[in-house]
Amino acid sequence: MNLDINGKRITVDDGWRDETLLSVLREALGLVGAKFGCGVGLCGACTVLVDGQAQRSCLLQAADLAGAKIATIEGLSRGDELHPVQRAWLDESVPQCGYCQTGQIMSVVALLRVKPKPDDTDIDAALAGNLCRCGTQQRIRRAVHRAAKAAGGGAA
Image (cartoon, rainbow, N blue to C red; front, side):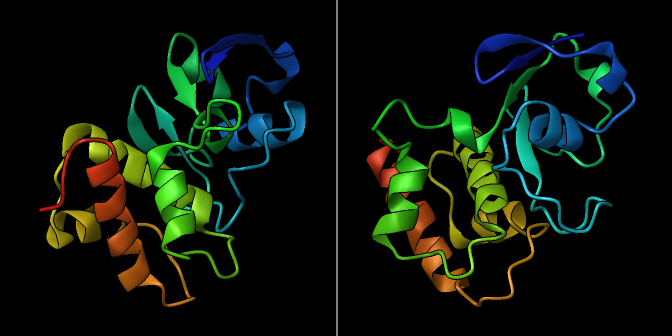
């Protein structure tokens, strides 16, 4: 089975066909950025991009993704250069426990692709399915606006 992950064609043993994308990423490929949270698509900790859309990898069967472009948090940065969303996350000191952060970042990357100048309502809607118990929602909003500005979208 061949998958396109972070711009590379990766061959995965056919024994993983019936597993979730999350299992394949973490266990077969060692890409552990997407986290196992609830396992039923409600928490968002496992969020990756599939053809540019934020998707819950715990709900996707690996065999169904042949031909799709999959992006994980590991594929966002370019060498030592962080993606604007990753940089904004650090600049605004968003992470606390960090468990939900990769899912949140991937959801924001998807948001900024379709809405380069999101307002707070857009941000809240895009992240509604990403649970965070640390209470950093205000910092998250600031980070999204900062990333939008850095990417040329400006702040709404």
